[in-house]
Length: 155
Length: 106
Figure 1 (cartoon, rainbow over the protein chains, first blue to last red):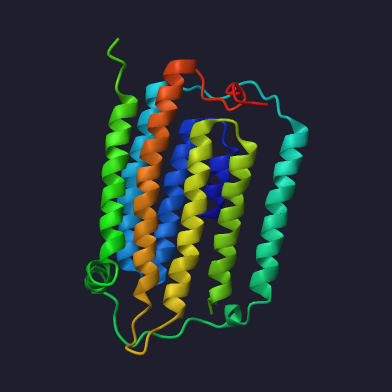
Figure 2 (spheres, rainbow over the protein chains, first blue to last red; figure 1 turned 30 degrees about the vertical axis):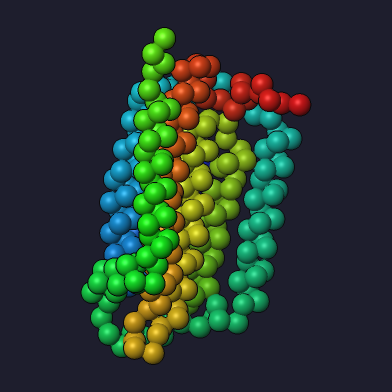
């Protein structure tokens, strides 16, 4: 999964990048399943590997992008970016290394999580009812905005 | 055995890859893909903590999974809006290279 995640960044062809992203998301869904989060794993496959990636590929085809054939790398910018990313990674390693609970294994579950759709649904429509409705409004606004943005000017 | 730290480290590496992608690449579509990678890295650590904190009734902590659900919803909306802006930009400028979009540059 990490290899394909890196391939997203390294590939010069946007289509190859997008396909690596699909494999990376499928690997991530497998990790979610291994953590007993079946519902999250399934919506990861449906939403990301399905809908979002179709959107990405569709836009790539629509814009008819070719691979960046010219390879003019700004070495100073690249070195700075890689340094900052590595510093972030080292900080994460340090924090996880000093985190006591990180060395413990996962406690066993007393019950099967095969009905986690029901449990998530109960929380979603109970405790988190207001955020759920706000998300609904957000998606509506995003839909209207996308339609408005992608409409051709009537002039 | 697989520990909580392993999942956190994988999540951290994935986040760093996404971050490097945003900083390194000049293609706006790939920058958006790297943003998705970073959001998913956060989701992975949320699900790992959800599984780690087993509730007294023997089930994982579902609050984190509801949060992941919200993150996925917002990310999908964000991708749709981002790609629509990208298409509008491509129509206006015929490019999606961030180097060529420097009108606001000081």
